[in-house]
Length: 520
Image 1 (cartoon, one colour):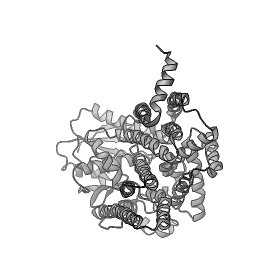
Image 2 (image 1 turned 60 degrees about the vertical axis):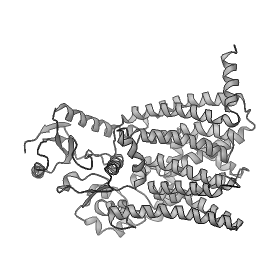
Image 3 (image 1 turned 90 degrees about the vertical axis):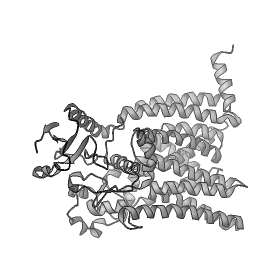
Image 4 (image 1 turned 180 degrees about the horizontal axis):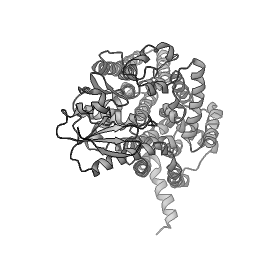
């Protein structure tokens, strides 16, 4: 019998050679996804903490009912919630793509498995895309780098659209690369590419445009060079798929806002936070709207008026945070980014498109600035993370030279998993900024359950220092769950009695963290 080390080296290495490299992907992805799943549960307890998550859940639950929007409750002011449109219609302000991916997970009451699933899917895509663009050795290094990048791991703890849109955009890139490399079947690959870009556009439209712009230029440049009938047909097919996704987006807008061009996001901002608009000089442009009756003064003031120079300055800050979050620490991240930039002269031509994508995504968000972007706002560049890490992996492979193809891969596999454990330990404190929000949500649910009320309406009385990042007004679209949360409106609370005849009534006072029975 061979010694364990010899068996590990010879057997696993033979498995990783040639067409059997999918074994590596399966084993590594399974282990990493399981580890990150436990981390996600430990960090989030699968409880939504910020209003973005609640809005996406609300949207998925609406879709599960077979609807696009819900009718507003007659006493709508009790049910105003951040990122929920509540003006004649009751709907999320967000784009529909991510909520559609949430629907099957919400159907089985396991929505937090959605980001974990897309985390694992992203690893598989990164492997095969890296293999196509840079080769097998780079693919083996790119997967661990992506798997344990702090920014990517943390995204698995939130019901946010970044993970799914990143997967769609990586598949868009995969289709484009296959289209460039194939001599036959090119129409299928260009359709594949256009389809997944369309899904990304329905999920995060600005990000999808930012990433696609350099690739679209490349596609048109290649077509102009070839000038064949086949290339012309491929361009038409690609354009048709892209046009269909844009049309679907317009139809969704029409259903929610009544206009094909007015997004739900824009409608929400118009009603509640006019200063939160894409562009510059928002205070000058929307000062009149900021005096409207439904404007949330505190939230509206949270956003800042800014000029073009401010936009570039915040872009630099955002880039700094991106470097910090892509690796565990600014120094490490900056070191690897600098190596990549120095090696952009490498022979492999795929480094330049990735570099252009990174710049394009940075540039398209220059007009979008509010204080939240200064911290965790590097997630606006998140969809470029895997591509940048793939390019860095290729740079490192080139820097090291001809890495032996045998035992190296086995050691890389083991070392990568050990890196996973150490990275997760390091990341233990990275999501603490929302821990108070999750703890508050869990506490409120616990004391309501302890009140032994079969059905309850809980009026929430917020403290003066209430954090805008989370909200306790979190309901199903039909407002018929066992516990319904409403805003405390003092003497007007009695108005809800006729709508909830079999419910007990309580006030939750955030200042004292107490649940007070209320007789109406």
